[in-house]
Image (cartoon, rainbow, N blue to C red):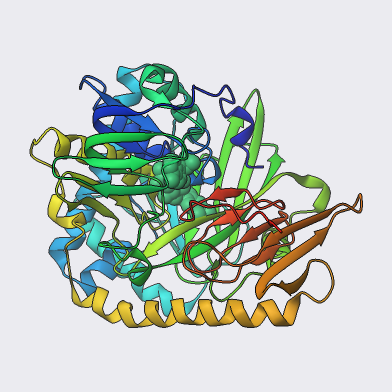
Length: 479
Ligand SMILES: Cc1cc2nc3c(=O)[nH]c(=O)nc-3n(C[C@H](O)[C@H](O)[C@H](O)COP(=O)(O)OP(=O)(O)OC[C@H]3O[C@@H](n4cnc5c(N)ncnc54)[C@H](O)[C@@H]3O)c2cc1C
């Protein structure tokens, strides 16, 4: 459980159980979906549906930094695309922070927003030059950057620091929007299929359909393949996080350049201070060793087992060019995804952009995030991502054979792969182990006791309930 999850508003809003006709349907109530609904709150016939509880997706597992200092993104964009793109992205992130502050102030949302210094640091010589380039770029955009001592007691070669960045409690933000917009939200309401007729989209749930003129998909990983083909444009990265109580809030956040990723922030509540430490960011296609990866966080930060107050992992979608996709897929059909682990700023920005798209107003940063973009950076990464997907797919099939001789054990029943896990009370949990989304073999997550897809991040409970998309189906074993 993440540090934020205990504060998640567990009071379910009603399920949608009958057919509806609306102007705009938003699918997914994470930071992107709820912020979109917020900006559309004065539009008639606009609703949001969430398969689970609002905020119960990737958003509840974030580290909650609201910052434009994101590793060395501007140097990467400048070197791989062009300087103009780097400048636009910087503007977009500063704009998003401004937007977030404006919403919090206007709606009196109290979510532990705190201004902190943000650091990027490296302990590798090869990244020092990149850090210098990042500093030079930021200074060319009139940002005050310090070459500073990193307050973290860890060995490093150089660090840069900016001051006008923030951290917050993401779930308090989500709860406030959910409360404010509750009359337009349905929870435990999953969309499993979307079709188009002449005028409208028809979005199907288990026992209802919603006809909508506009559809906005903010469900983290879109569950449809065509026409967007996200699996060919991205890969999944997973990170492991621990929180411990510490004596003092040092009011900073930091992150490394390159691998291994290390990241720290502080969170203060009821006179207690927590240090949130992240490490071991890995491509899920290459590394699924959850127990080892959690242990690595302990080792990197010298955290003793008894100090741990929360332990969780999280996944995000990394796009080919490290820019999110926010915009129109086809007429009146919109998507926001691929936040590259920076979905607090980009999710809030997506909310404003997509609401403006529906209202047919000018959309800020439309060209930067368009789904129709193509640049050399994407083409270069396309091959490695396609290879990566293939490696993940083949690797998952191979692991299925290699790993599970004991508990869980994988066997074939009627030609189908089935996983049987026996829990501490000797109860058997049997599931199909092929992901219904695109057929990858699921990997058993020993730490969190879930079945996880290494290709596109779907997740299932021990008894086969789909906990996270893109899969819209369960993997419950039926004779
Ligand atoms: C380790 C880690 C740390 C991070 N830290 C930061 C950070 O410090 N700062 C930052 O800016 N970003 C950070 N991020 C990124 C950020 O957390 C995510 O990008 C962001 O939370 C994604 O929000 P979302 O709204 O797109 O998705 P989600 O929060 O996953 O919301 C999607 C919602 O859609 C619902 N849904 C799914 N499928 C369906 C369906 N078929 N029908 C109906 N509903 C559906 C789900 O139930 C869910 O509630 C981090 C990411 C990771 C992995």
